[in-house]
Structures are given as structure tokens and as C-alpha cells.
Image 1 (cartoon, one colour):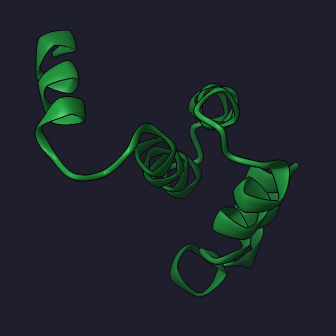
Image 2 (image 1 turned 90 degrees about the vertical axis):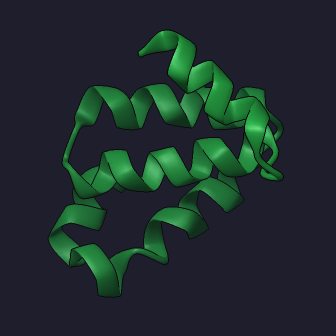
Image 3 (image 1 turned 45 degrees about the horizontal axis):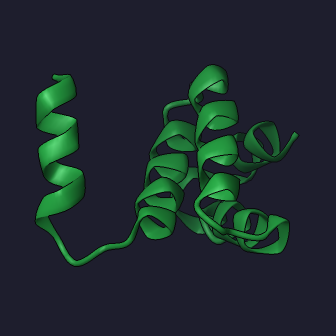
Length: 74
């Protein structure tokens, strides 16, 4: 799985920041608190701003629901 993840990261046109924001959204949608924390740290390390992270989570409201977004933001 680790090798597959590395291959996918390098195979496409998305940069690391975008990949981490996408994965953050998936973590939020599945209510995986540990993964949310991990992808926030990784997104910050990849250059995302706190405002971009917050906006990416808030943007999920109509898709994953307000309670799930609030849980992720907290």
C-alpha cells in the first residue's frame, strides 16, 4: 500500500498541497479524527495556509453535512 501511495503521488499533475487537501476532505468525510490531524499537518508542511485548510473543510458542508464539517474543523 505504501508503494502504491507513493506511485500515485508522483503519477499525476496534482501537487503535494492539493493532494493533502483532497485527502483531508476524505478524512473529514469518513470522520477519521487522526487522519484529519495528519493531513492538516501534511498540508501545512506542503505550503497550505490555515485559511486554505479551513476553506477546504467548510467547502464540504453541502457534500458531507454541517455536523461532520464542524467535527473536522474542531
